[in-house]
Length: 338
Ligand code: PEP
Ligand code: MN
Image (tube, rainbow, N blue to C red; front, side, top):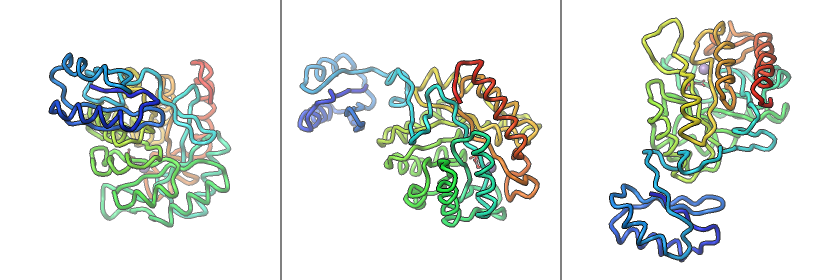
C-alpha cells in the first residue's frame, strides 16, 4: 500500500506517519519525489485497518492500494506517462527519440565520424560503450575512461546527448560524470546492487531487458531503481532468448503494448542486439515504432566490417539514413513527431 503525502506536508507530519506505520508492525520504504513524499508500506495484510489508522493523519493526501508486485513503476501508481527531458530531448511524449552509434567507442576519430553521421540523419542521442560487458573475456573490453572522454568530445562537437553503459558499482560515479543517460545492460538487469546504486543518482537510466527475463522481472528491476529515489528510467526491449537461431535473440514486440499498459515508464526498442544481423535491423526498428515504442537504440558504424564489436549487426551510414526516413513516414502515420 502506498501513502501519498500532500505536497505541503511538513517533515514532522511525514515522520509521524512513518512512526505510526512502524508501530503497527510494518516496514516502510520512503520515496522523496520532487513534488511529493510517498511512503510504501511493505506487505500489508489488513488494508482496511491501515486505512482507518492512517487516512486521518495530518499531511496525508491519500492511500493507494497497488495490486501489482511492482509499485512505483506501475500505472496504478501513476496514470500519466513519465516524460524524461534532457534539455531539448523529450523522451516518453509524442516525440520519437533515436539513439545511435557504435557498439563500442573505438577511437576518437571513428567516434566523431559516426556521431556526425547519426546526427545528420536525425538521431538525438549518441550511443557507444566505454565499458563493455563481453561474452568472452578475450574480446575487446572497451576503452574505459578514455572512451568516456571521447564521448564527451563528440557531445561537445555535435550537441548530441550521450548514453553509455555502466557495468559495475565502482564505475557509477565516473560514468555519471560523463553520460547523459546511464545504460544498464541486459546481463546486469538483475544486478541488484548496481540497480540500487544508479537509483541513488539523479541521472536518467536506460534499463535493458535481461535475455531471459519475464516482463514482470523486468519491471521489478526498474522498481529497484525507482524505489531508491530515481524516477527517470527508460525501459529497453532488446530481444529475449528463445529456441530460434536465425536471429541472435527474439524481439518481443508485444513487450511494448504490454509494458505501456502496466507501467508509466517510457519503453524503447533495440533492434540491433535482437536481430544480430544488420539485414533484419530496419524491419524490427520499424515494427517497434509502429507498435508504439518511444524510441530506438541502434548500432551504426561507418565501416561495420571493421568494427571491434557487433559489426555484423551494425547499420552502415546509408542504411541508417534510409531507416530514419522510413521512421519519419511511420511517425507521421501514427501521429507522432520525430
Ligand atoms: C549494447 O547495447 O552494446 C549491449 C551490450 O546491449 P545488451 O546489454 O542489450 O546486450
Ligand atoms: Mn553491441
